[in-house]
Length: 65
Image 1: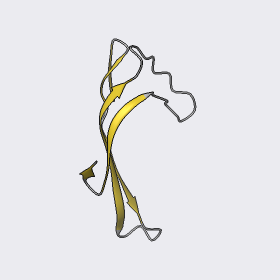
Image 2 (image 1 turned 60 degrees about the vertical axis):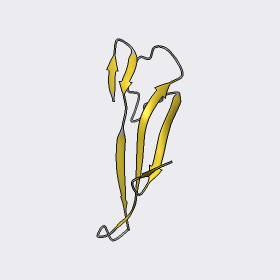
Image 3 (image 1 turned 90 degrees about the vertical axis):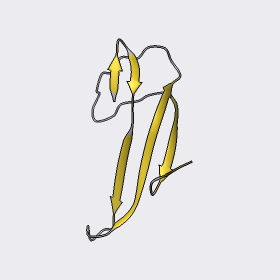
């Protein structure tokens, strides 16, 4: 995530989920092209969570829908 003057300039991520044995990848999730619903944000990590309101493209197994 890149925040520039209180605006999310970029937010893309990819995650791989593994089976419980940790050997084979079960599936992946991709999140791209975040568009914030508010004009300005302030990132203040509280605990281990960050909350953002907006829309983004989501995918599974490298297919964005």
